[in-house]
Length: 232
Image 1 (cartoon, rainbow, N blue to C red):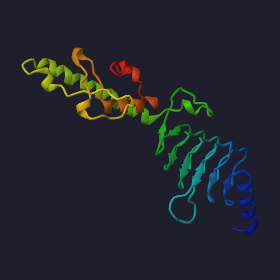
Image 2: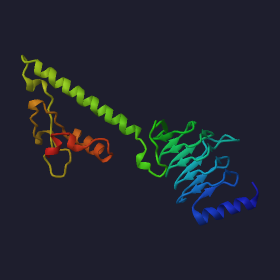
Image 3: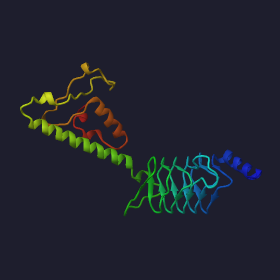
Image 4: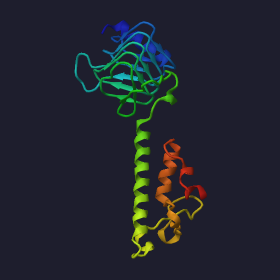
């Protein structure tokens, strides 16, 4: 690579925070919004009218020579912090969600989210390129489904326990614990009081509530869906 193109690249990085290799190919109407931290590799190709947000990396994998960076089609939107790595083809009109890591080729007219990036089709639903909050969260869907499955299995266990009338209910029911300390830290088992699970109500132990608080912060589960936690 000649000296002057590299000099211009370094000056542009110093002035704008955007690092574009002189060998990269950029189409017409490409817009880099809040470009600090954007990195575009040597053999990367960006199609016409693409929209790239801050912190995006169009990088390579390994130390292979030749074409080793991604190719973006036309009208591609790459969300903030997303990484598109390797010699892969991204189709036209693709939406890549913020923070996603894309390692495989993506067909046209679809949405990619997650780590690693997963293709999610939104049939009949238009996703605005600027509304990243409208993008689907595949991890949240899976976790929510698993939580619902666990709740259903617990309900079946309690039903079976009720049917075994010849065995004392308390001997079959696993101990359920709740908060006793004000700082919400895990206390010793001997210092925690048990929660009455009579009446078919599923209650939460300390560890269960910690999980629910995490899921609640992620928008996957809401604490008010747990009757026992809502009383604390």
